[in-house]
Image (tube, rainbow, N blue to C red):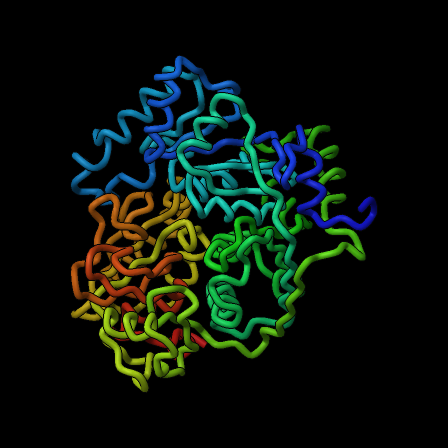
Length: 460
């Protein structure tokens, strides 16, 4: 394989401690990110009389369980049991904890690259499936369960089965009004939600090269919705520019050495992949889901399809939709702009560009939830919060919020939401809620018009 390795193979080889047979490898874990919902792992570690082997490589934030309501921070904010336990465990075991309200706090998959904790060539584990987001840095990043979390805390190692390799090439130029979220939804719609199962997926091509880092995070974030355990983009000048000067990134001579190493990570010419797919994306339109998985997706000008199977029948029933209905113009009740998929500063800028000078429709309640304290402060420095507030959006505190029904931030039963999050399965945003996934621009346009709307008609 020498000279013909993929980026995944190169990083895997660097971190392999032992070949365990039957396709399994013991890997060193460079960074371990933990959140508030991982408390049982620490309790189990305490029961065993164990300790955190490398606390300097463990970083923690509370994000899933906290409310983002600035007017009612307790009991689901500073003092809920998940947050209190994480704070206690950080003090006991000595790992870094970015507490609520501090610089560095936010959604784990937003703050880890924002702080430079994740770097090209590293291995990163976190007890959340959307850890694949961090593969956009040119890292191997994956989600883990509670038992594996305990193992990593105790040993700084993880047992992993090496997957097959898949490369997806996306070439072309995205049209105006079409963003990374549209691109990944379109890809999932084309391939299906199981296309990446058993694979590490590398995304490449001219459309990927043209994306900023925040668009790349969006792409890798949803490779898990392709079924892939790992999603990656090779680091390049865009990556290096993003990382320069971040708190945990190398500095001085170490930076120069790191850059020289990172340039060697890209897949070699002639590297072999088990599956290769290629798409031209120059003609895609803004995308929006109609069903209860991200693969049930349409261009904004499309109509709800006839059901192809029993699952589609169930999805149509749950979503309250009829085949042949135009997706554009469908009345909505809620809009959520946030989550680890689309809560970064570029996402908020895109939404604000649509919202400026307009008002949220009277029938809609709309939220903007920044992904981190840093994003919130930057948005406020650019007066984006003022644009959203003037339009009638609620400007909330950082956190996972309405992406999942785990913190009190819910879409009420029977109500229809346009959401910039990553999952739309039954009950994801609250029991009986109906979720349409879309980009921040489409969500913003929909909030202002009160129906699922094409952002190009408001701006481009």
